[in-house]
Length: 176
Image 1 (cartoon, rainbow, N blue to C red):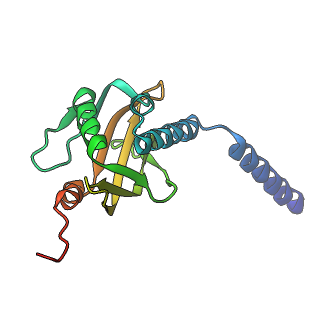
Image 2: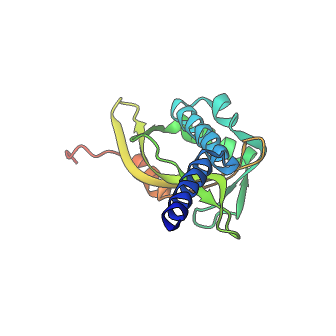
C-alpha cells in the first residue's frame, strides 16, 4: 500500500507540474509582446524612422530626466524635439542583438510586463569632410507599458553627454 501511495503522489506531482508549466501567464505574454515593441522601437531609432519610433509610445508617454539638472520627467513633445535634433546630428547602431529582461513592480516586486536591459550602442557622427567618429557605450533602458501595449514611461541611463561631447570635439590631424 505504501508503494502505491508514493507512486500516486509522484504521478500527481508530475501531472500538476506539467499542467502548471503549460498554463499561460498573462504577465509573461505581456512581457513578450512588450519586448517586441521595444525591439521595433530600437530598429526604428536606428533607421531614424520617426513614424515607426513614435508609434510604440502612448501620446501621454514621459521620460525620466536622468541627466545632470534634468527635470524629473520630460514629455513626449519635448523628447520628440530632442530625438529629432540627435538624429540630425548623429547616427545610432545597436551593436548586439538585444537581450530583454522582465521588469517588476517597485512595490510588489512581482513581474509586471515592463521591459529593461543593458544595450551596447554605437553613436557616430560624420564630419563635413566625410570623416566619421564613433563611440560605443552601454545604455541601461527601462520601459513601462499601458494595457494597450504602448510605452508610457522610459528611463535611459548612460553617459550620453560625454559621448556627444567627444563626437562634437574637432578632430586633430597631428599637424598642429
